[in-house]
Image (cartoon, rainbow, N blue to C red; front, side, top):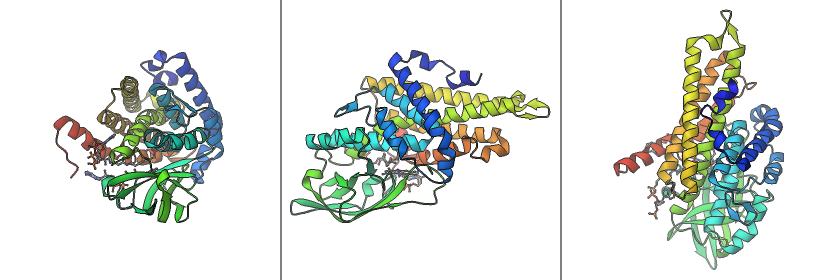
Length: 387
Ligand code: TGC
Ligand code: FAD
């Protein structure tokens, strides 16, 4: 019965043989290599770097990009990978998003031929890691107000500023840094061993504990003109990368939600109170059915967005619709799963509390729930409520 709930409308039946194989391979990787240690890693605030080479071996980094050692996979395949990784832990999917959808995508979309040749094959192989520095202490939802600057000095650029909440910041080899110039926002590829570049990990996180989040400071970091992303002009460039990553989250959230529903169903069938399984109580059944409905609707949305993306018809507002709905639904599912498990629900021996804590970050990053509400409000009314 538990398995029926995981894909109630049988959406995976329509997967190609190749996508089904990919699903099973990544699911097995998560079950054997991630799940046995994830609760301990979360408690100890440790990201397992050993997983990076294995994910690279599976061809996951930049898998949706064409050429330069990348697989050129379709949106459904990429979505399935995000879903299966996030069923393990949102931090693992975050790692993939930042490496592939943000850092490698920025290079592929806006870099020169030399940038693509130098960085993409090494990043696809997991030999070089990337991070994406857009957010700042005083510029989160409103990146247009960023304070980081890049000013020309001889033939070089001098970068100054602070980037905050940067996933993989301290383990990255190359940082994609967005900074304000006299001509607006520009993107730079900054080797993290550059003089004046520092990365410091953010400790005491209640969420995404099995993922690295850092503060980057840049003090007169000298970057040659050849390391500026030549195709990136204005905020449109980083926001285009965000659209790619947000698409992955639309699927990823269904993985975390599925893991929570599965755990709650198993628990409810096993746990007896008043001499009956708690799954036999009407109130518990209503909770489970509401979770099933949210998860199934989220999966339908993800599948439709993948179809639109494959046809080249997916708009940023449609991505916002999926991110907003699916992350909100996953968070509700995780909280409900936690409640079904009673006191055991707060233990990391079961996955819902960890997913619930992680999903609070997912609700906030890549555009907060409120920002996506306003993007959708603007899309249907024509009126901007941002400022
Ligand atoms: P606005 O005037 O609306 O737009 C500026 C230019 O960008 C274009 N654009 C987009 N292009 C592609 N994709 C999108 N999603 C786009 N959104 C906007 C737009 O057409 C315009 O182009 P042009 O040519 O006319 O200049 O900009 P705004 O300053 O009014 O801001 C709009 C707003 C609030 C929606 C935007 O700033 C926003 O999305 N804010 C949220 C910031 C955010 O999401 N940050 C995420 C940081 S990275 C991260 O969180 C990684 S988490 C780790 C993980 O992924 O796992
Ligand atoms: P704020 O923008 O200060 O928002 C605070 C609250 O105000 C929110 O509820 C928001 O919705 C609300 N609000 C803001 N503006 C409006 C408005 N106009 N109308 C209504 N409500 C509004 N960033 C990167 O660049 N790279 C990364 O790799 C990265 N990784 C991250 C990893 C984690 C674990 C986390 C938690 C964050 C990460 N971020 C990253 C940062 C993330 O993108 C920002 O946290 C997010 O964009 C929100 O910015 P903020 O935290 O400054 O919140």
